[in-house]
Structure formats: C-alpha cells, structure tokens
Length: 299
Image 1 (cartoon, rainbow, N blue to C red):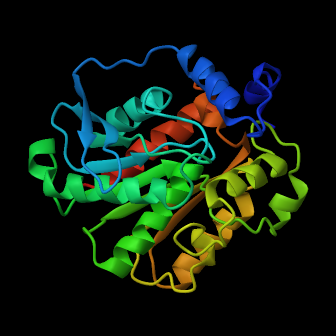
Image 2 (image 1 turned 180 degrees about the horizontal axis):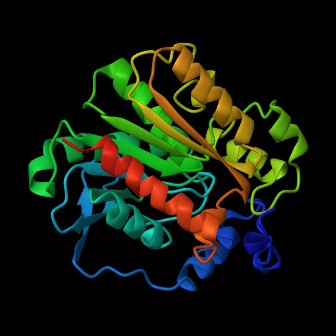
C-alpha cells in the first residue's frame, strides 16, 4: 500500500451496512470533517428535478466559462451519501473538468431498492438534456460519471439509455465502479478485509440494493450480454479493492464490443482512497479525472 495512504487507515470508522442509519451518520461525519473546497468563481445552486416518484434533489456546479455537462453520481454502496457528503468531490470534478456538474441526490436503499436510484438518475439525465442550454452546456455534450455505486449507476444508465433511446450520452466515467453482484472474481474472493470496502460490505450493499430481486443488467451492468453501442469510457481501478477485477473485465468487454476505453489501474491504492487529498497518488488521480472529462467534452 502507498505509505501516504496507509497512515490514514486506522482513522476510518467501522461501517458494514448492517445499520444504514448509523453508517450514514458516520459517513456524514467524515465528510463534515473534510476541509471545505475552494468554490471561488463557481456558481452553486440546489434544484429539485421533477420525476415520476419524488422530486430528485440535485446540486448544480457552474465554473466560469463552463463547457459541457457531467451528470455525477455519488458512491456509498447505494446505502449512504447525499449532496452534502459529495460536495467536496463534485467541486473537484467541476473545477478540474471545466464542465457544469449536476450532482444527483438519488434515493437510497434499503428503503428505496432498485430501480429507485436508477430511475432518479434517468429523470435527471432527461432534465439535464432538456435544460442543457440554460445550464451552460449543450445537449450533445453530456457525460455521466460516478464513483463506486455511483459508477455502477452511471454504467447502468448508459445501458438503459441506449436500449430505450434516451438522451445522447457522450462519455462515461466509471471510477472503481460496483458492477457485479455475483462477487466471483479473484479480487472479490481474496480482498476480504481491505480498507473501507470489504467483501462482506459489498455483499450487504447488493442485498440492500436488490431488495431480494434477481439482478439484471440495469442493476448489475456486468450481467449485460451486449455492450456494443455504448459511449466511450474511462475506467479507473484501485489495486486493493474488491471491485478491481470486475472493473477490468468490464473494460475489456467494452473494448471487445467496439467501445473506446481508457483503463487506469492505480497501484498501492484502495477503494475511495483518492479522498485522502494530501497523498501524491490521490492528487494525480483527481487531476486525471478532471482532465479526462475536459478532453471528452471538448469541441
């Protein structure tokens, strides 16, 4: 493990998703203790997006001279996270990419199991495409992205949008995405006690999200048989992460289906470790996410 990251491991709270309310409170405490990001020159607005269910809360970040739109979906195992806990990361994405970031406060499981979160993301995508000019972007310059469970949602959203003829998605950014409920890969079977995310925690996350239903490709994108016709992708993996091998396998399958993919495996890192922004490797990871989106949404 990268020594700069290893020093922080003892500070992480013990969360296992067996008590979602408790884990949300602990996650919120971590986010609140994070230094406030620099938002100078950036307009930030909270909006309620109409949906078939309850309105979806979103937070819109507009850097000066923004071009393009990024629909950003937070991590948290489909169980934790909200607009406030994601604020530091969404700010970095907006600043680094130079794009308008629409951070989505989708409904959480187990109270709202699949497909609630995906439905919320779909509603916000349709809203962003309809209001692209007002947001400061363009309807043909929309990317979707996310971390962990949010990366899984982003992948699922591109699949469903392709199949249902939804708004055009120019690019997908999947950072350590949660893609496969089967947990059969080498990394899922061997990384049983890695920092922040363990095999058991991933399994509990899937049980909450699926709510006892069988998983299909819109819930677990690794189950999709056809990956052709999807937007170009950037996929990043952490070396010491249970999701690592399913992410690499998904990237290879995308390439074999004719989809352009950039795959980056970050050595010495663990799931979510780029939130430790003082580490050199985290700074490089975060800078690359912004640069990738900037290139993808360029003229």
